[in-house]
Image 1 (tube, rainbow, N blue to C red):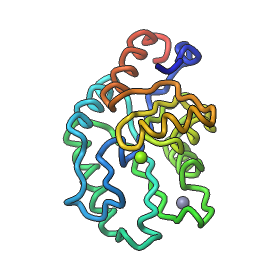
Image 2: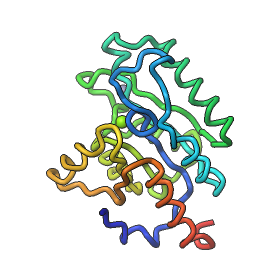
Image 3: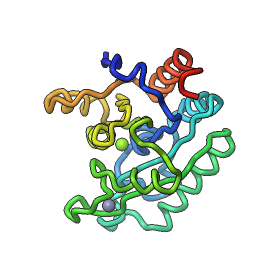
Image 4: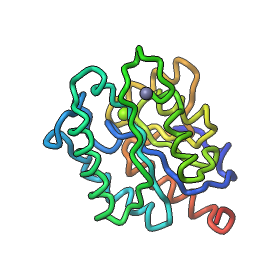
Length: 200
Ligand SMILES: [Mg+2]
Ligand SMILES: [Zn+2]
C-alpha cells in the first residue's frame, strides 16, 4: 500500500481534483455521446460523503478525441452538463470541469501531465494547489499532481492497475493507491477526521 506518512500532518484545503475517464466513469475510449457515459455505481455517493465534510471538487480531463475528430464539442458539453447536473443533485460542489481538447502532438500546456488546467482552476478559485488533492487512474494524473506538490491518489479502476506498475518503474509513488474511488474518498475522510481542528 502507498506511503502517506509524509502528508499526514500536511493541512489540506479540501479541494479535490478529479480525473474523469476511468476515475468517475468506465472508460471505453473516446466517449462521444451522452449515451456512452455512465458513472461508476459508487461515484456520486463516495463524493457526496466528502462533500458533506466541506470538500469541493474540480474535474480535469484530457479529451484529445476533440482534436482527433472523434468527439464533437457539443457532445462533450452535453456530457459535462450532465455531470454538473448529477453532482448538483447529489449536493456535490463542483468548481468546474476543465478539459484539454488538444492532440498529444500539439505540445499544449494543458494536457496532463502538463498543469495548465490546474493553474487555471487555481487562479479562478483561489486554490493553493500544494494543499489540494488529486485522484486519477493514470500516471499523467499522478505526475501532474506531483509537480504541483498536491496529495496524489491513484485509483485502480480504468487504467489504474496497469499504471500503478508503470509508476513503480519510473519511481513515482502516489501518496495513496485505492481499488476504487470509494477507497480513496474513505481514506480522505479518515485523514480529515484525524486532522480536523487543525486544518479548518
Ligand atoms: Mg483517466
Ligand atoms: Zn491542451
